[in-house]
Amino acid sequence: MKKILYFHGFSSAGSTGTATNLRNYLYEKEVRVISPDIPVSPKEAVVFLKDFVEQEQPDLIIGTSMGGMYAELQHGYKRILVNPSFHMARLLTFRGLGNVEFQNKREDGAKTFKVDKQMIAEFKEIEKNQTFKNITSGEKELVYGLFGRNDQTVHTQDDFIKNYGREHFQIFEGEHRLNDKIVKHDVLPLICKLLEI
Image (cartoon, rainbow, N blue to C red; front, side):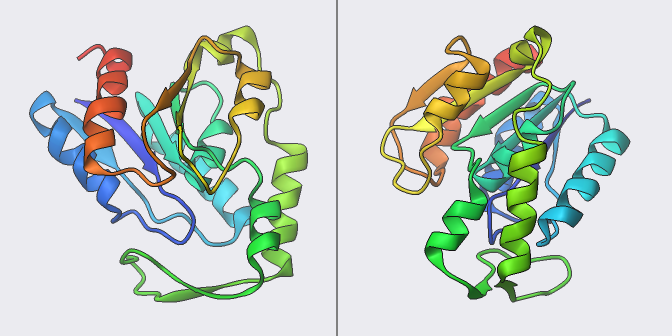
């Protein structure tokens, strides 16, 4: 059985509807989709996801928004970055500090979390020292970028093209958040191609 790890976006959880949609579509193709709750602390998240990936040894990693930024760090694996938010520190600084509600149910039952200066500093550290590092020609072959034409939340197409080129760059008709139609029409065909299913 082939295995996909799905990394959710900011203020979300492993229970997100995108992971559920992927499970439903891929069940008959005998593909397992695992979607963990990502720790709120960026520093903790990087360590957690590195260990999780090493433990699970997935055939493919898919990350949306913040999850796309974390997926980019997982060298050596096939990855699909959907509307990746490579500049979380800037985005959160613009939005402001304070309590944020989780959009999906978390396994630990948490309902809210706090955006503070420490979180922003941790994102800055990751962006400065880890994002887009050690990209070889082999890495470029592993990474695909899907970008919504009408995404009003993040604008990282130029970052992707600068670091990974245009060969695996794709625009889809949509916004920042994925819906069932986009998953079925744009994400699923790429998954099937990369997993050869």
